[in-house]
Image (cartoon, rainbow, N blue to C red; front, side, top):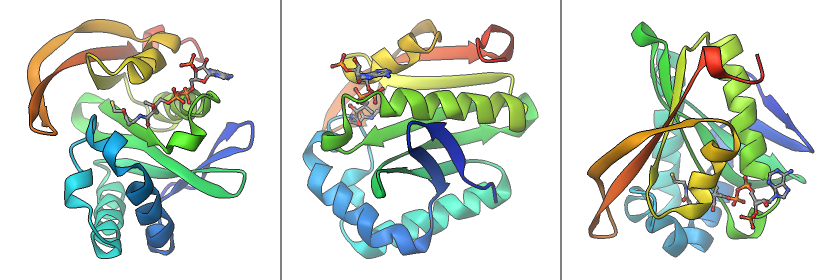
Length: 182
Ligand SMILES: CC(C)(COP(=O)(O)OP(=O)(O)OC[C@H]1O[C@@H](n2cnc3c(N)ncnc32)[C@H](O)[C@@H]1OP(=O)(O)O)[C@@H](O)C(=O)NCCC(=O)NCCS
């Protein structure tokens, strides 16, 4: 299991652990309505037990090398999660997903976290391609890959059913050869 990833400015990405379950569930509870606009899972995460099951699942994915999710810790508190929602080792390819608590928005934390994940993905995991898929109307989220030099590769029509509506995805991709941090 990978260790902590430092993102600078006091932000740390730590592999999710069962002892984080209560704090993570409280954060989901407090942010449920805004998260369910853009993410598929809040409706199925309704208790600390659900959150524990989620953490066990992502730890198993990390052990199998098919994903890697981190808790985002800032000023001693858990403020969200970010990580590789899937890793396709055969094709050296992965996708990043993320969310932040409302009170942590607007400080550049997620841009810093994704930048750290790019470094980890391209340098340590030796990935060749990293993508981010975002609801086309999710302005704050689209700004992250745009800020970090991803290319907008196209639109997947009605790619995801969120809060009972079908949402188009903007697909952003970044190749190792294009990565500015290399
Ligand atoms: C998507 C989401 C993580 C974006 O959060 P965010 O705080 O806007 O993103 P960042 O942490 O990168 O911060 C960028 C903001 O901080 C500001 N900022 C301050 N210092 C900064 C710095 N050093 N670097 C970059 N941005 C900085 C930026 O100007 C920007 O604010 P603005 O939009 O008012 O201009 C958050 O809105 C969220 O969790 N939404 C709900 C879930 C979701 O949509 N998840 C993604 C699904 S694809």
